[in-house]
Length: 115
Length: 118
Image 1 (cartoon, each protein chain N blue to C red):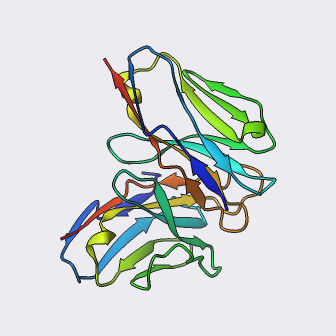
Image 2: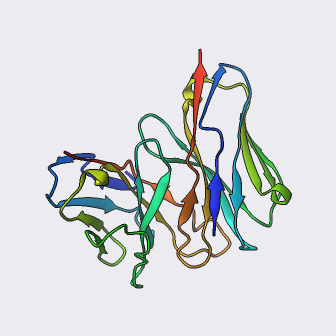
Image 3: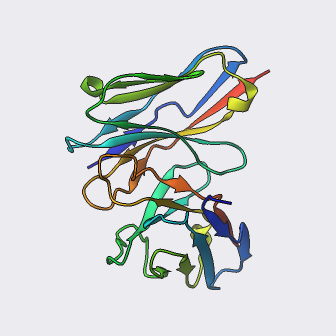
């Protein structure tokens, strides 16, 4: 069965610190997609990144970076120089490519960035 | 606006009443999903629509839950005889369509409907 684990329930950092959010997934599919979404206090999920299972090249976008490692089934997300506006719940998700492409979500990590 | 819209944003109802939640997907998106998010938890898949194909209802928790979609437009999620455990945020998402190796499967979410059953 497919599963996404975000072991960190809540993380608090002081502004300007770097922070890494962990995501570990389980799937028997050879082709799959991984996603990160941000859910600010307003509640709406905001798409951050999509990664193919066959593309392990890590990506940096501004203050965000992602580390995808198939060998450890991990897809971690790092925010450098965190800001108060980064405070949100971050969800990692795995796409079910068997037919519906529904997402299997982790339970989320609540990030609090303190001024 | 070009995003997914949902209505109402909040719904308070009494136990045993029926409720109907509405979702307007992004224009041109053939795939539509409903998810449920209980307080402090992740999202649970409920149902999936793709064009005119039969929907995937495998995530619906009971026969009190049903959903409809007309073509590639609006969808409604109906909960009959609501129970307190139905209290949650119901999120709708849409995507361009079946996975083709591009980004067509990326789902874009609406703001959700917060349902409270008293």
